[in-house]
Length: 192
Image (cartoon, rainbow, N blue to C red; front, side, top):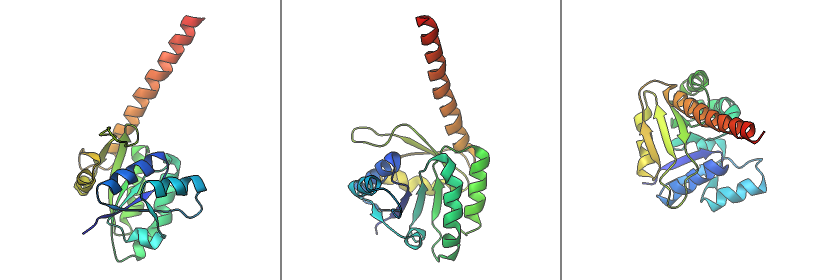
C-alpha cells in the first residue's frame, strides 16, 4: 500500500522533500490553489499532485514546510477540515518556529483529533548525492515520523517533549547566523 504524504508548501525545501518522498515510493500531495505558475511547475517537477484541503486531510501524514510566520495560520486553516475528517493523520510542523509557537500549533492540531509532531529541518534541500537535510522530531508521537526515514529522508527522534525539535532548530539558526554576523563584522573591521 502506498503511503500518502501531504507536503505544504512546495517551495524550494518543500518541493525537494516532496521529490525525495516521491522517488522513494510515496504519493505526495500539496495545496496549489492560489500558487504561482513557478510554484505549480516546481511541485509538478517534484512529482507532487495538487489536492483539496479535504484530500489533504485524508493523507497518512501532513508535513508543514512554510515560512515560519505562516505555520500557525496553516494549522488554523486546516483545523476545521481535519476535525471534520474521518481520517486523523499525523501532522508534523517542520518550520523554524520557537518552542512556544510549536506548543500552540500542537494545541490547534490536537483539538482536531490528529496527532502532532514537532520538527525542525537542519541543512539544505534534499538533492541527488546529498543524504540531508536532517529532520529532527520530538513529541509523544515523534516515532510516527520513522516512515519518513523509510521514504528516504534523514529523520532523527529527540524526546517526547513538544518544543524540543523547535528549540534545537532555533539554537542551530542562532549559532550559524551569529557566526556569520561576527565574521562579517570582523571582515569589515579589518578592511577599515
